[in-house]
Image (cartoon, rainbow, N blue to C red; front, side):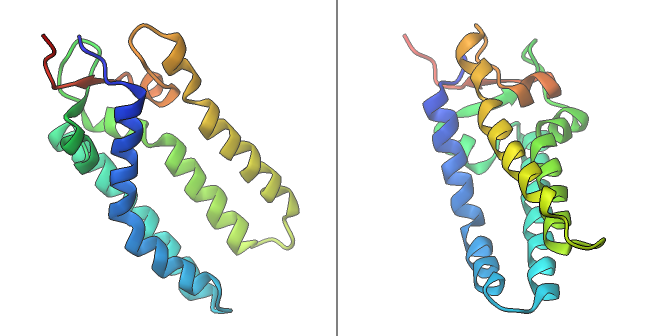
Length: 158
């Protein structure tokens, strides 16, 4: 199989972020206000839209819009179509990040200063989860291992 390069995967993620940017801008605007309920509602909406977008596009098409543009696809290691469970497991870090953000911003049981530390550690883990890409022959990240997926290039090189 022709595995997708880190550069193409990273660029695909940037293209996908451009899809989210209007929502992030709106959230940034409300995060500066004192209206915590509006901020949390927008944060929740952005997260749900992002998760649904990533899960459904990977499940239905095997790729997000960014991956479509860069001609890469998510598949099972045998080259088969990704199932809904695989697509959900690929988003496990995003789902955990969402819950950390909600707890961090809601602080439902008083002042939870340690949540900021958990959030920082988790952000570091999100970066470190890409290390296996450079160490494995099939260029898998931690979320690829969790979901039992790989990302391949659809471009045929001669």
